[in-house]
Image (cartoon, rainbow, N blue to C red):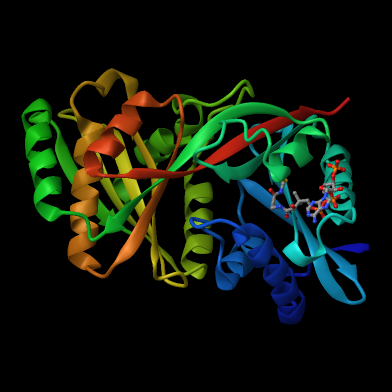
Length: 337
Ligand SMILES: CC(C)(COP(=O)(O)OP(=O)(O)OC[C@H]1O[C@@H](n2cnc3c(N)ncnc32)[C@H](O)[C@@H]1OP(=O)(O)O)[C@@H](O)C(=O)NCCC(=O)NCCS
């Protein structure tokens, strides 16, 4: 197998890379949420300030059989490289995945990274660490250790509007001092700095594994750069925030509508600042945002969310909203010697 960096501006090369990825990512899974080709193009070609994407293609007789991806964080978490390898299901078991993993490991090492992180999708009815699943066993046999288990949950849209309204109404007496505000797409200028601080703390506030991760500095340049990539990928974001009496933005919840993948909607981050917890703002912002989305986009879709298995509070909110568990993501890490 010949491994080369992918030139994502070359349509043919990108199509070959994406075809192998799509087949590998969806094989044997009912609830895979792969990136669509135009989303991938935007992600690979977009100029972000926070992360750098390094995709690689493995060719045999001119055909892409295996893909690799290294994501380098550029502002914080400078010791960590997130990586992933995929082999087309019809070409597995002959060493391509191992060769690609070695390649992306060396790329990460050359970039000065000392910790590798990856995740593997495994069935919900199996163990959290995916033991016994070929993909989890593959990664463990190559020196990775299980770090934390996440659960993927789905909710069929449109969700029961009366139920959402009832949940919002139940939460309302707890947050009478707060105002809910919503915006479609880019973050409004007047709350940009505060919103940046809030989303930048998700990495440290949401439960994560043993891997120490820094909070993210989401300054204006970074937020606007991410928004440009996001727009180019055909994704639209619905956001609801909670504003405290003193004007501080203290909670948010965001939903993502991917235009190139009309049957999915993604529940992204929901976070309440620690000092403002107990006011049901997580449920309030989430339910409010979903009601708004359903009003604007009434068609059927599957809403997908993911939480660490230990995030009892957020899971409680999701279960109240009607989400059901469908799959696990097992996160693994490896320290480079
Ligand atoms: C995990 C994955 C990349 C492995 O790719 P691969 O090209 O089959 O990898 P290799 O051939 O190098 O090794 C696969 C292992 O399964 C064994 N195997 C044998 N026959 C196999 C078959 N028909 N299919 C899959 N694996 C097989 C191999 O011998 C090897 O065993 P080992 O771990 O004891 O060495 C591939 O299954 C995949 O794309 N999975 C989805 C994405 C993913 O989970 N990636 C891992 C996280 S980075």
